[in-house]
Length: 410
Image (cartoon, rainbow, N blue to C red; front, side, top):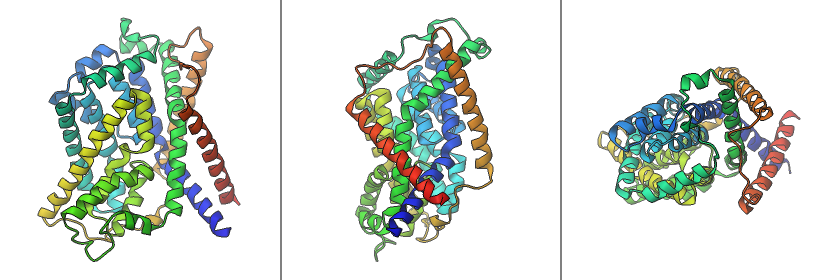
């Protein structure tokens, strides 16, 4: 019983800690998304990123780098870009850049894993964008794009792009700030259950699943052949890594300590990099994409991402091997050394962005008290079975975290 209580406490601490680490990035991403949805016109977005050419890909990558964020907020901003008329490939380039070309992520990787993994993250991130672009051009999913845009258009009764109002006029109008607040709150309403469940599961797995499980999952790790597993074992580990990430979702920041565990257990560079890249091919992300674009487009994005992740992980592995630069096993830092709640820059950023959230909620309530809200939910025949299951799981997750937090305080 005492062991269970200890695991419960550790799992809750890990879940809350990972969320605390990512909180400011969540808020920043949804703020950017809300501003884009309300202030940017469809015509402007189509002119800037409406094509799948090199210029649009470069702009998507650059804007993604500037708005570096966690997976959930990147999904929201990507949806805003796509719904405003950006091409599919530039939208995906934005999403990949904002989750992989992240300065803070590089710092965390350097601490836990070493500089070779930092090179793998940034160079591999650019290669992943290029491979995804190539896959989109080869497959040409125009019908899926049309269906996805139709689904998003059905979710809004009004399209403000038809109004001849510039973004400068909008940003000085109280009416549009109310819309920004309402859009921001709706973004959270769409994903809070996935966020709550995802981080809760991540904490449980981190605390309860033994390292031997991952060692058995990645064939060839931890044995005599770990230092030189050969191509087929390296390929197997790169293929298994997204599967492991699928069931251990933590996010682009939180999965680095677990990646360090895998590397310490003898998983190859390719396997670890594939695991790190897989924050966008996990179940909560798949569900959110399905809610945004429909299941067909969500599965299509999942498929091309998997191809890109495995191929890029192998390219980076053998590229570094060719120069004799592969890191030695055990060169990373023990992930158990992490401390989540400290007086540091994350605390300051979280406080600042929580205050910004308070302002958005106030604007949301002001907008509700007005004559009409231009953005609102549409209930088509009540919640689906999936929604009911998620609500039940979210209640269970909330009770689990509350109980764990109580144990921490006791």
